[in-house]
Length: 114
Length: 110
Image (cartoon, rainbow over all chains, first blue to last red):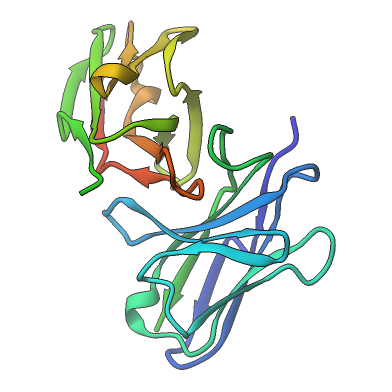
Protein backbone atom coordinates (compact mmCIF):
# COMPACT_ATOMS: atom_id res chain seq x y z
CA UNK A 1 0.00 0.00 0.00
CA UNK A 2 1.43 3.42 -0.92
CA UNK A 3 2.41 5.60 2.00
CA UNK A 4 3.52 9.09 2.89
CA UNK A 5 7.20 9.24 3.80
CA UNK A 6 8.87 11.92 5.93
CA UNK A 7 12.52 12.73 6.46
CA UNK A 8 14.33 13.05 8.75
CA UNK A 9 12.64 11.10 11.53
CA UNK A 10 14.37 13.27 14.13
CA UNK A 11 15.96 16.70 13.71
CA UNK A 12 17.91 18.56 16.37
CA UNK A 13 18.57 22.25 15.63
CA UNK A 14 19.93 25.25 17.47
CA UNK A 15 17.47 28.05 18.18
CA UNK A 16 17.51 30.66 15.44
CA UNK A 17 18.56 28.23 12.73
CA UNK A 18 16.51 27.39 9.66
CA UNK A 19 15.11 23.90 9.29
CA UNK A 20 13.49 22.13 6.35
CA UNK A 21 11.25 19.14 6.88
CA UNK A 22 10.63 16.92 3.89
CA UNK A 23 7.69 14.82 2.81
CA UNK A 24 6.93 12.63 -0.17
CA UNK A 25 3.14 12.38 -0.51
CA UNK A 26 1.35 9.49 -2.17
CA UNK A 27 1.93 9.85 -5.89
CA UNK A 28 -1.62 10.37 -7.20
CA UNK A 29 -2.68 12.64 -4.35
CA UNK A 30 -3.40 16.29 -5.03
CA UNK A 31 -3.82 17.81 -1.57
CA UNK A 32 -1.05 18.11 0.98
CA UNK A 33 -1.09 19.09 4.62
CA UNK A 34 1.21 19.81 7.55
CA UNK A 35 0.16 19.28 11.15
CA UNK A 36 2.01 19.81 14.41
CA UNK A 37 1.82 18.05 17.78
CA UNK A 38 3.54 19.55 20.78
CA UNK A 39 4.50 16.83 23.26
CA UNK A 40 1.50 15.65 25.25
CA UNK A 41 -0.99 17.76 23.32
CA UNK A 42 -3.40 17.24 20.46
CA UNK A 43 -2.52 17.39 16.78
CA UNK A 44 -3.01 20.86 15.25
CA UNK A 45 -3.49 21.86 11.62
CA UNK A 46 -0.85 24.15 10.14
CA UNK A 47 -1.43 24.46 6.40
CA UNK A 48 -3.00 22.84 3.35
CA UNK A 49 -1.59 23.06 -0.18
CA UNK A 50 -3.14 22.44 -3.58
CA UNK A 51 -2.17 23.29 -7.14
CA UNK A 52 1.08 24.88 -5.98
CA UNK A 53 -0.47 27.30 -3.56
CA UNK A 54 -1.67 27.45 0.01
CA UNK A 55 -5.38 26.60 0.33
CA UNK A 56 -5.76 27.31 4.01
CA UNK A 57 -3.54 28.07 6.97
CA UNK A 58 -4.03 28.29 10.70
CA UNK A 59 -3.02 31.06 13.09
CA UNK A 60 0.05 29.00 14.00
CA UNK A 61 1.37 29.26 10.43
CA UNK A 62 2.94 32.70 10.69
CA UNK A 63 5.62 34.41 8.61
CA UNK A 64 8.40 32.15 9.88
CA UNK A 65 6.78 29.17 8.15
CA UNK A 66 6.67 28.44 4.44
CA UNK A 67 5.76 25.46 2.28
CA UNK A 68 6.93 24.47 -1.15
CA UNK A 69 6.59 21.71 -3.70
CA UNK A 70 10.01 22.04 -5.33
CA UNK A 71 9.52 19.17 -7.75
CA UNK A 72 6.92 16.58 -8.69
CA UNK A 73 7.34 14.47 -5.59
CA UNK A 74 8.56 16.43 -2.57
CA UNK A 75 6.58 18.71 -0.27
CA UNK A 76 8.57 20.73 2.26
CA UNK A 77 7.94 22.77 5.37
CA UNK A 78 10.52 25.43 6.19
CA UNK A 79 10.83 27.14 9.53
CA UNK A 80 12.99 30.17 8.96
CA UNK A 81 14.25 31.08 12.44
CA UNK A 82 13.40 28.37 14.92
CA UNK A 83 12.24 29.06 18.46
CA UNK A 84 12.18 26.79 21.47
CA UNK A 85 8.40 26.52 21.18
CA UNK A 86 8.73 25.04 17.68
CA UNK A 87 9.84 21.79 19.29
CA UNK A 88 7.15 19.31 18.30
CA UNK A 89 6.29 16.36 16.09
CA UNK A 90 5.46 17.52 12.57
CA UNK A 91 3.20 15.34 10.45
CA UNK A 92 2.74 15.52 6.70
CA UNK A 93 -0.48 14.18 5.17
CA UNK A 94 -1.94 13.87 1.70
CA UNK A 95 -5.31 13.11 0.22
CA UNK A 96 -6.56 12.32 -3.24
CA UNK A 97 -9.09 15.11 -3.05
CA UNK A 98 -10.07 17.48 -0.32
CA UNK A 99 -13.17 17.31 1.84
CA UNK A 100 -14.67 13.88 1.73
CA UNK A 101 -11.48 11.88 1.22
CA UNK A 102 -9.30 10.29 3.90
CA UNK A 103 -5.97 11.87 4.72
CA UNK A 104 -2.94 9.60 4.86
CA UNK A 105 -0.31 10.56 7.43
CA UNK A 106 3.42 10.06 7.46
CA UNK A 107 5.29 8.82 10.52
CA UNK A 108 6.29 12.34 11.51
CA UNK A 109 9.49 14.29 12.09
CA UNK A 110 10.36 14.97 15.71
CA UNK A 111 11.92 18.45 15.82
CA UNK A 112 13.95 19.39 18.89
CA UNK A 113 15.12 22.99 19.26
CA UNK A 114 17.99 23.56 21.66
CA UNK B 1 -17.28 27.50 17.58
CA UNK B 2 -16.12 24.31 15.92
CA UNK B 3 -15.36 21.66 18.51
CA UNK B 4 -14.31 18.04 18.70
CA UNK B 5 -14.63 16.47 22.12
CA UNK B 6 -13.50 13.00 23.10
CA UNK B 7 -14.39 10.97 26.14
CA UNK B 8 -13.20 9.57 28.37
CA UNK B 9 -9.81 11.33 28.53
CA UNK B 10 -8.22 8.33 30.21
CA UNK B 11 -9.19 4.68 30.30
CA UNK B 12 -7.55 1.75 32.09
CA UNK B 13 -8.60 -1.76 31.11
CA UNK B 14 -7.68 -5.28 32.00
CA UNK B 15 -6.57 -7.36 29.05
CA UNK B 16 -9.57 -9.01 27.43
CA UNK B 17 -12.05 -6.29 28.36
CA UNK B 18 -14.16 -4.32 25.89
CA UNK B 19 -14.35 -0.55 25.64
CA UNK B 20 -16.18 2.26 23.86
CA UNK B 21 -14.57 5.60 23.01
CA UNK B 22 -16.73 8.55 22.05
CA UNK B 23 -16.23 11.57 19.81
CA UNK B 24 -18.72 14.44 19.73
CA UNK B 25 -18.51 17.14 17.10
CA UNK B 26 -20.24 20.46 16.80
CA UNK B 27 -21.20 20.75 13.13
CA UNK B 28 -21.80 18.87 9.88
CA UNK B 29 -18.82 16.84 8.69
CA UNK B 30 -17.57 15.40 5.44
CA UNK B 31 -14.62 13.57 6.96
CA UNK B 32 -14.10 11.72 10.21
CA UNK B 33 -11.09 9.58 10.94
CA UNK B 34 -10.01 7.57 13.99
CA UNK B 35 -6.30 7.24 14.69
CA UNK B 36 -4.20 5.28 17.15
CA UNK B 37 -0.99 6.98 18.21
CA UNK B 38 1.53 4.37 19.24
CA UNK B 39 4.34 4.86 21.78
CA UNK B 40 6.69 5.91 18.96
CA UNK B 41 4.38 8.77 18.03
CA UNK B 42 3.12 7.33 14.76
CA UNK B 43 -0.49 8.04 13.83
CA UNK B 44 -2.04 4.82 12.64
CA UNK B 45 -5.21 5.33 10.64
CA UNK B 46 -7.94 3.04 11.98
CA UNK B 47 -11.07 4.15 10.18
CA UNK B 48 -12.29 6.71 7.68
CA UNK B 49 -15.93 6.91 8.75
CA UNK B 50 -17.89 10.13 8.09
CA UNK B 51 -21.05 8.05 8.44
CA UNK B 52 -22.18 4.47 8.94
CA UNK B 53 -20.47 1.50 10.54
CA UNK B 54 -17.23 -0.29 9.75
CA UNK B 55 -15.39 -3.21 11.31
CA UNK B 56 -11.78 -4.29 11.15
CA UNK B 57 -10.96 -7.28 13.31
CA UNK B 58 -11.46 -6.46 16.98
CA UNK B 59 -12.16 -2.82 16.19
CA UNK B 60 -15.33 -1.28 14.89
CA UNK B 61 -16.63 2.25 14.52
CA UNK B 62 -19.98 3.92 14.07
CA UNK B 63 -20.71 7.50 13.11
CA UNK B 64 -24.18 8.98 13.45
CA UNK B 65 -23.70 12.20 11.52
CA UNK B 66 -27.20 13.52 12.18
CA UNK B 67 -26.58 13.31 15.93
CA UNK B 68 -22.96 14.48 15.63
CA UNK B 69 -21.09 11.69 17.32
CA UNK B 70 -18.87 8.75 16.53
CA UNK B 71 -18.00 5.70 18.60
CA UNK B 72 -14.95 3.46 18.47
CA UNK B 73 -15.36 -0.03 19.91
CA UNK B 74 -12.43 -2.14 21.01
CA UNK B 75 -13.22 -5.74 21.88
CA UNK B 76 -11.02 -8.25 23.69
CA UNK B 77 -8.40 -5.59 24.33
CA UNK B 78 -4.70 -6.46 24.20
CA UNK B 79 -1.71 -4.71 25.73
CA UNK B 80 -0.68 -3.61 22.24
CA UNK B 81 -3.90 -1.57 22.05
CA UNK B 82 -2.41 0.85 24.57
CA UNK B 83 -1.77 4.37 23.37
CA UNK B 84 -3.78 7.46 22.54
CA UNK B 85 -6.82 7.32 20.29
CA UNK B 86 -7.66 10.46 18.35
CA UNK B 87 -10.81 11.41 16.52
CA UNK B 88 -10.23 13.92 13.71
CA UNK B 89 -12.99 15.72 11.89
CA UNK B 90 -13.19 17.61 8.61
CA UNK B 91 -16.08 20.02 8.81
CA UNK B 92 -18.32 20.72 5.84
CA UNK B 93 -17.35 23.99 4.19
CA UNK B 94 -13.71 23.82 5.26
CA UNK B 95 -10.80 23.31 2.87
CA UNK B 96 -10.29 19.81 4.20
CA UNK B 97 -8.15 20.44 7.26
CA UNK B 98 -8.78 18.02 10.10
CA UNK B 99 -9.64 19.19 13.61
CA UNK B 100 -8.37 16.73 16.18
CA UNK B 101 -9.85 15.98 19.57
CA UNK B 102 -7.64 15.84 22.64
CA UNK B 103 -7.62 12.07 22.53
CA UNK B 104 -8.39 9.17 24.83
CA UNK B 105 -5.35 7.64 26.53
CA UNK B 106 -5.89 3.90 26.81
CA UNK B 107 -3.82 1.67 29.05
CA UNK B 108 -4.40 -2.07 28.83
CA UNK B 109 -2.95 -4.04 31.76
CA UNK B 110 -1.89 -7.68 31.45
